[in-house]
Every structure is written in structure tokens, then in C-alpha cells.
Length: 505
Image (cartoon, rainbow, N blue to C red; front, side, top):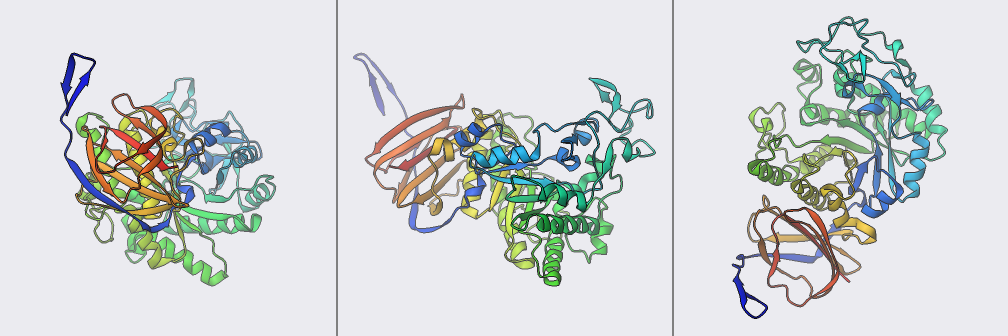
């Protein structure tokens, strides 16, 4: 291609070779509107600008949340110190979030203790003088660890920092809420409480204890809020989907059954025994396991292709997951997350929905993190995730926020029904194409994860007027164009590192 600028200047540009695909508009399935969620949105305008559909009150600190004083504890995230809740009163939070148009997920503590005040801490230097680290802003508050990585001994008295918690108090809190949550999580990642909250639960959590706590507090939640849905067990990562902190002896004691399938079967049995469903969503947290911390060219390319772990049975995970499979699942060198979890649900507790309560791109400030997020949101819609909430609060104008803006920003939304897409080449590592439809209007999201432009002929894309927006390129900044007319769909170029949204108008 030769381009002429002015009267005397020309330059040449080599057009990329065309790649082929098609969309099949009649072949659709619903997209859950609740895949576009975040943890702790910052304001009502944030929710409305990014089109956030569901918001979660979650994370490690809420395990110790005391709703009768709005105190919490940072656990091992910050020296086991009590503090005032960063997000204020839970009831107020539920009110303004739902008022902004977002569904709400509220985490209910399910251990035996919650914070008693905003100032106490569990490991004072005066009691434990040889700790590995102390709070740089409070030299008496330690991290509870010795230099060799072991915990100090004996464990602290929980009453130094905490006050007792039980289902009676939980029901008092939940039934007294003016603003009711749509969904409750039964705690947050309590399978690792002996690490994250070692000061209140130093004993490793077993299969049986975790099940008991979920059943007990789910029962209390549904008694206090008859219409609420329950999402659990909010397991932290791949390793703990399959075993407990106790270790392999716990798995052996449960007939060598991996944890999540065992948990689902037990929750099904509880419904059969009581006549009441206590689990509405199988809730997991998913963090990509490959190491992309170098953030060099190789790490960026790895980050961009590892979204295949959400759906692709042929993608051998590029991490310890494939090196050391530690479960009894088929095809266990692949994560194959969404279809795998849906299969476990179908086998062990049909009718349960699937949620991903925490997930992240691994690089919130990098354009590749934004492209991972755009790709992931398309995948969640295509493969039928029921709700998902990003950890934690994306910068509204950063790469992750721009991915939400791409699909949902300022009242213009990607289609509510997923349209079948077929590509002639298997290029999922460098490209994603997602199609949707609403009231006969087609919407498309192209995600070019490649460092070079890509060109496409996507058949069955209607010509005519489109609303278009995109972000990406070297700067990662958003670009905006209100409308354009697509006169021909035989050759469309997507620039490098760019995500493009198109919707018929």
C-alpha cells in the first residue's frame, strides 16, 4: 500500500495477510449480565461509567469484620492489626452500591472470632521479641513469624484482638440490614486461615471443618435472609480446589476424593437431608499460575496466551500445574477451568451455578493486563460463567478499567446473547473475537494480543452504521469514535495490542 501525504510525500505500508472467520448470528446462547463485576467499587459514578453489574464486599480482611463496630483485621496482609473497615458500614455500602445499579455480594465471617476494636494487634514485640518483621508505622506490631519462617509460639490469645462470633450474631446482623445483599459468600478463602488468620485459627483447616462451617453459616444466612443466594467455598487457588491445608492425609481419609467434587456432593446430600438448597453458586477464586513477573516481551506474550487456561483442554498450563499435578482429575496438566468446573457441578450437584469471586490479569498497570481482561470477559460470556468479580478495584482510566469500559462503558453494552464464532486458524494465543446480539443488533469485540497488526475477513458481519470504541497500542490509552459506516467487511485491520468494540446502531 502506497500512501500519499500532501503533494511530495509518499510512504509504503505492507498490509498484513488476511485471516478468515465467520459469525453465526442465529446460533446464540445467553450471556450472564453478572460477569462484569469488581470487588469494592469506589463510587456510584464508577459503577455507572464502567457498567459494573455486580460488586463484592470480600477479601482477607472481611473474615474478621465485626458489623457491630465496623472493625476488621488485616491478617497476615498487614501485621495482624485491627482497624476500622476501609469501606465503612456494610449496610451503607450495600445501599449505595445497589442504588447505583449493581447487584451485591456480601461476605459473612464464618470463623469463631471477629475484631473487637480498631487498634489491637496480635503479635506485640513486647511479647514476641524475635519476629522477622515489624510494622514500619508501629514498631511493636509484628508479623508473627520467626526468621526461619515458622510461627512464634505459643499462639496469641485471640481475646487480645478479637471477640467471639457465631451464627446468632450473624443472623442478628443479616436480619437487621436495611439493604439486603443479593448473594452472600460464606467467608473468604478459609481453607488457608491457618496462614492468613493464624492468630485466630492456627490449626490447619480440614475438609470436614470447612464443610461444617459453610453449612452452619449458610443455614444461618438463609434463615435471616430467605431470598439470599449463597456462594461458597470461595477457594483461593488451583491447589486448594483439590486438597486442604491438612494435606494428602485428609484427601486419603476422604476416599482419595478431591476437595471440590467432594464438597459439591456433600452439599447435595445436605439438600437431600434437609429439603433446602444451601449452595447456589460454586464460588472459586482463580489466579493465573504462570510467572509473568519479569514483564519482559516473553512474559507479556505468556500473559496474553494464558487466558486459554479458562477454556482450552489442549492448553498445557505453563506453570507448576502441569509439572506437578496434585489431583485425581482427568487431563490434569491443563486447567481447563470453566468447562472443568461445570462438569464437576453436573456430576456432583446439578443446578448449582458457577462464580469466580476473584480473578486478576497479573498486570493492572500494563496494556497486556487490559487485553487479558478484555479477552477474559469475552471468554466468561462465551463459556457461561454466572458471575465474576475482578480483584480488586481496577483504576477506572487504567488498562483494566478500559476493558470494562470497552464492553459496558457509559450505557453502551456488548450483546446479551453470545453468538457463535468460528476462525479458520487456531490463533487464540494472539487473538480473540467475541460476538453478541441484542434485539437483532450485532456487537463485536476484537482483541489483538499480537505485537503486530492483524487483518481479518469475518463473514456474516452486517454492513451499515456502527458505534466504535477501542483502547490499546503502545500507550494503552482509550480512543473514542461515536459512529462509523462499515461499507465492506472483507478486510479489517486491528492494530497491535488493541481491543476494538463495534456495535450496530
